[in-house]
Image (cartoon, rainbow, N blue to C red; front, side, top):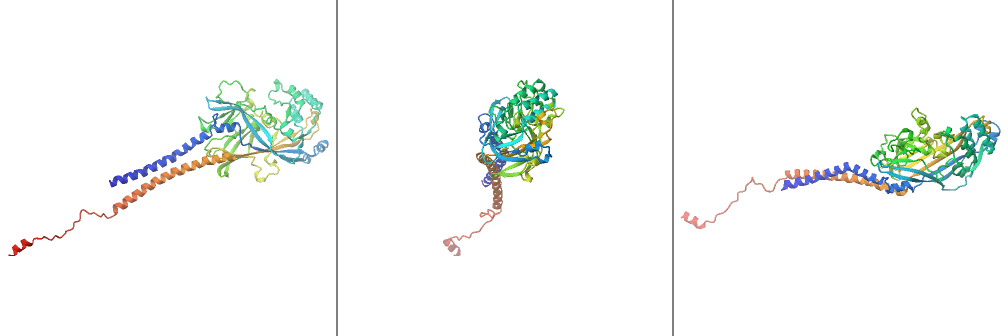
Length: 496
């Protein structure tokens, strides 16, 4: 019975160890299933509702450049260095994004949708509310006309004169950034250049502003299609741009001419490997970015991977390749129809990203960090993101446009912005609880393993010690006990 008791105890210890070990090995998969449920983008889930109507709004700070000596500079030809530009700002706005026209494609587990973005002023300060800058409408006409017929250029030149345009304009900051000002000339310009012969020319509406298409309530983005990662978790958050091509014979097929198929910087897959770079696209900025791991960084008690980018490539650099967008049919998507000025580099219009050194009033150490993301590596949650870009245009003489015949060639800074996003407190607390559950599971599994091993070791040690202890009952030793016989009568007879 004693041996059976020891065997039962040892078996219990081994069973506890095996159970803890199996739980330790399986806990990663179990936790990934829990994370997948938390990150589910199926209609009706909590994240789906947050994605459609975000409760945390990124903050934007806009800076514009006032051309303080514009009249003096243009009236007397001077050196470029004498042009004086004063940075005004920040003008702080909150970004409100909503997702519309959402359809769940059950066949391939994707969501098709459009986006709308609206900016709302979050603070008012003593900054000047009017800005003098280059007349971008007139500059746009001159830029588009440079490769057109002489007769058409002269007609555009007459339009500029007829509508009394100048090289510079003074506008309120709200008009310059978002609202724009009604420009009757743009309607006339569309009739001249937006014809069948110039289908690649992006034609503006009657108003023009740097972020005009963002803040028009009826204007939405192109059609996007996002993979929800049900069939392949590594594809979670991958966005495809299907453009304006309405008739597709195979909705699942994707060709390079259709646009892009990358992460969009909002949702990331779980289990991030920092040894591999991450590619994201920002279609509203006409940019594809390569994020590279920089360092580990703690935010609100959560360890995250910080990714930075120092090289931002415009889409048009990729479209000019032999097999790129230039070889695509006109029916294919043309990126950049929704975003900054609706006339960025994707459309070949004169709005250019400035070099990192053109960020004034920023520490030298941060000038080259135009964008960074801090991602929680286990769940792929965006803890923090930042993007800062500056834009300029080029004022160039044009002998066929009377307004620009005698202007000097000049690089004119227009605006810059800083967009900052930080995970909200409620979501941060919930993420901490989820990660704590991961730690608790590991600790419980390790505790089970340690407990089982401890039981086996203690049982073995006790069994060995018990076997060496001297026994109180020894069957191989005997004791002779003396006995006295009482034979009093018999002894008397013998002696007689």
